[in-house]
Amino acid sequence: MEGDRKYRQRGYQDNDRPANGMDRDRGERPRQQGPRPPLDITGPRLPRLVQNVTASRCWNCATTLPAGVDFRGACPKCASPLHCCKQCAHFESSTRYQCLKPIPVRIAYKDQANECELFSPRVTVAREATTPVSNGPVVNAPRTPQDARAAFDNLFKK
Image (cartoon, rainbow, N blue to C red; front, side, top):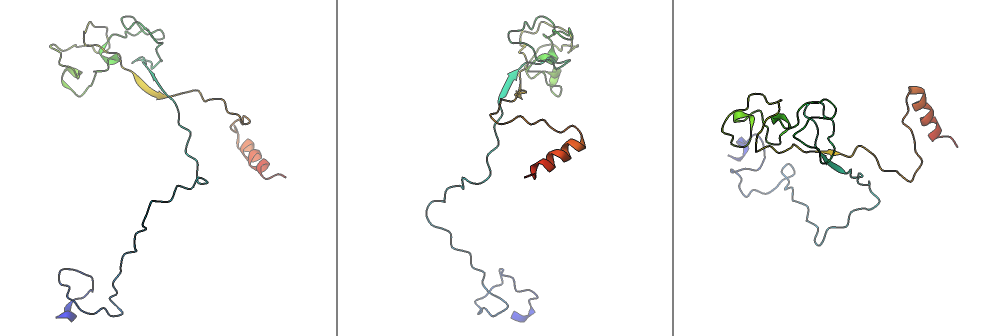
């Protein structure tokens, strides 16, 4: 019955037959005992973490609104109302009445000023746009292919 199996993989039909040259037992490597060795400090450096900035932005023109802006007013750039559903943190177009909070009546125009008591300004978290000053020389990015080629050639000059 042993010879009728086409392949010799291990399975539920295994028996205690001696291992021949074709069917070797592949044992697992022994695990290393003790604590793991420390990470190599000469390896690649971790990326520089960027700072996060929290700010409110206009729903219409995406202009960053200054701190302490009056949300009863209008955007300083595009003059769209800021106390509206589209500026609210609870605005969600896939929910009932497009609001995450239970409101009694639907507000028809989401981009016009309203008097909703549940209004909370939407705050976004973004990366800091300015880069910190580095101690090394300032290198401008190449603007043309010739600039890139010249910068590459300068790397290997002696």
